[in-house]
Image 1: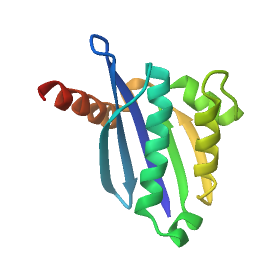
Image 2: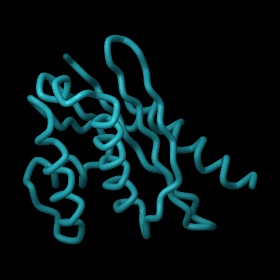
Image 3: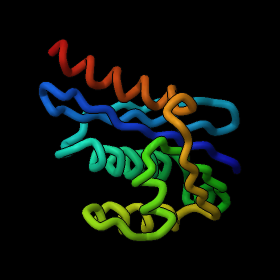
Length: 136
């Protein structure tokens, strides 16, 4: 089973509220997720978005499906992509450790950095979560 997972974070500078957008694509079906986060900065929010993406994917798949899943994870955050590939982040190691643990559930896991313009689906979901919180 081949799966694409996109995540992005957004931050409202005035309120410092952060949110995540996740787009999971399995068999040409899209599964969107948007959620407010409890992050102190945008970098932390990007790590939390990745963690949310992998936890959501685990919940959607059976254990057998997880063990055959080939996951291509896409992020526009250089620090997240680099940290996962190096298994190290100076200030966010607890997130890297959690993400490394989560990715072991899948048969294969690839991390891909993409430019912002190629991550619009997840980005729009993150913005929607922020805008929804502003209206409350």
